[in-house]
Amino acid sequence: MSTFADIASDFELLEDWEDKYRYVIELGRALPPLPEAARIEANKVRGCASQVWLLTRVTPSPEGPRLAFEGDSDAHIVKGLVAILFAMLSGETAAAIAGADPLAQFARLGLAEHLTPQRSNGLASMVARIKADAAQALRARATAGP
Image 1: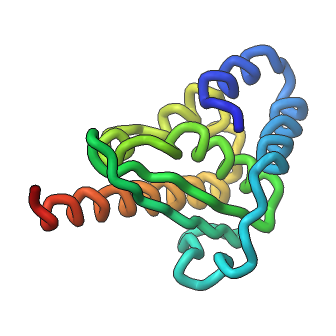
Image 2 (image 1 turned 120 degrees about the horizontal axis):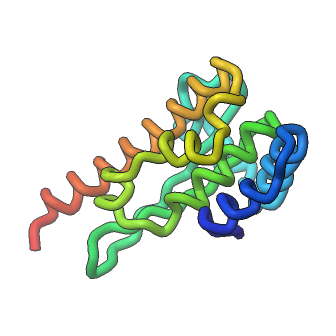
């Protein structure tokens, strides 16, 4: 899977938006398939016009809980947005995710202004879900004690 730095660098090389959209779709195609068993209501992201599933795995680490994500969408562009989000945030600590601003990174790519309002709302919903999962992991760690 590409790193976000690689994706941002590739975006800078692409000049026209059709090429950038094709690249986003390619990133989505490169996502590992989400097992059918994970396509359940509890993993659906609310607020997306397309269907989006997000599975969060939390693992302990000395720096605090780390989150890893799996996901899918029935829309090619949205699946690419999922892949970019994962490149940004998967494997990070819950604290780093809580402090991150993925929407600003999407704006840096120039993607924000080229998404339909529905896709922008869906992206915001995905970010909110990931941040909520990070906050929940931090709360669980705090209540577990030393």
